[in-house]
Length: 407
Image (cartoon, rainbow, N blue to C red; front, side):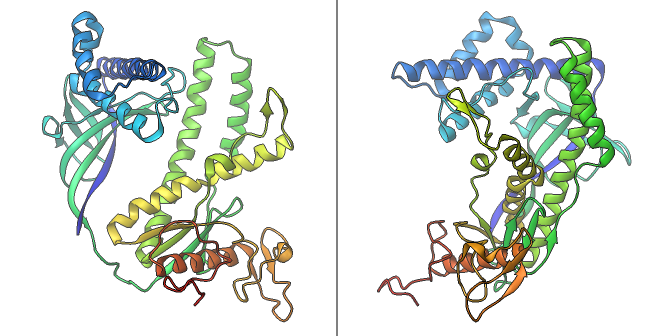
């Protein structure tokens, strides 16, 4: 049994003074992040190395020289450097992004849960006491349900939120309630997720009215001058629409993931390189790309369906049920017949129709369901061999470890 930490998110109702303070905290944290990243890159270019302990020491010295750094709590700035250290270790110093004032949404974390106090004021309201901010009112949308470990304040679509990391005594079971169950999931651009059981999970995340207003706002934004008040108003209106879209997508992925892991001990996904698949086809200085408009539409469809967010939601929900999430090689899953195993490029006649062309077979099925069944079979083969990697193709039969022969 393994302990699980949960998240609780609430919308804040800040006073004008508190709103100015959190904005300032965010700007200071952004400056500390960018300065620390620049220092790390300069050290790496000279063949040296810089990490969290010396940067934290230099931060204390900088606070004595620059008074504006003292406005933010010390442990918030230290946590920013710690997050930068983790990002550089995970992704590499030169792949970590700068925090742009125009593109980055302000956020900062209070790592000391013992300095945070939460009280409920009524049915709809509560309040939280945060260092230097004092008591801040919040919408009481759900019980806290545990001991606070940390709190993160962030801004999204013009509103400020606080997210608590809570120890609610939940644990990951060693075994799923139905250990013999498994499911494969095929993610697509027409339907967000189709399972090997034949279930279709999909919904629209933006309404027709919101889509029209979003296009009009984009045209208005293109005609505004950089730095103008009208440009700021257009950006705020666009963010408000896309904030609702993002919330619907997040809610859909969370609910879908919860239903899937509750019924299955093994969930199998394709190991899709989503960043590469949604890369622009506009080309480089060397020359323009091919089928740019068509690729742009595909990229938007991929990102709109939330493939990566669904994967994250499944991984998160699996902690509560003991479900194993496995990723397999996606090669040939859409062309392989789930009935006879024949792999032919013409098997998939259209986006939704699969007809096996092998002699004596003629199996027909929905193309996405057929692919999901193949994904499930590949995951079962990988799990049976005790290898949770992605090196095995669905065209291979599970082999015997001792003899190398197919079983």
